[in-house]
Image (cartoon, rainbow over all chains, first blue to last red):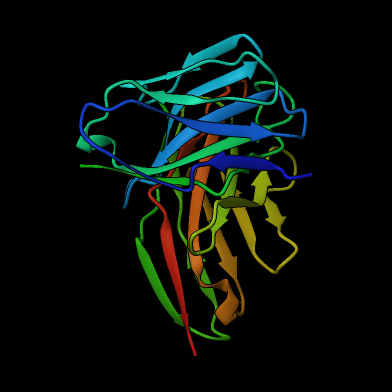
Length: 115
Length: 113
């Protein structure tokens, strides 16, 4: 299994541009999520999904959109990039739907810089 | 709303010394507790978890954590650290029936020879 994969690894955007961060998992996990990691703040949940066709907001959803058309894929869209969205983005998945008792499997991350 | 506080942002320690990384949480309901480790330029990996039962949980590489309900803490300990333990450690909490994980700010463990 490849586990959780993310593309791209690095991205530089100009303010106002849009882009999609890709995330895929091959473990048939129902639960998928997106976090952003900023120094000293740990990871903060952006959006999550408990199954195909179901998404919900996390702690910091503003400026981001998600969709879940398949079990495998969970893309994150930045609608109009702002410098405050400069961060490292992690995608994660977990078996068992919404109950996180088995922990989460994390991808390698995407480092995004907005100038 | 739940919150997680990791009291130390950095912990320097010499190799083979013991270490404790502190984690406190606030929640009014029963919780699941986790420790994750992040090695440089990598994603997070689950280190250990507390769901129920024995309050002392162990990982395969010698770390242990103890759930203390009265003090709302879940401190991580290792009796003798190695250089390879150098990493950032994150404490996280999920309210039992919930589907969101809240992370602490992280503690950078720096093991010196």
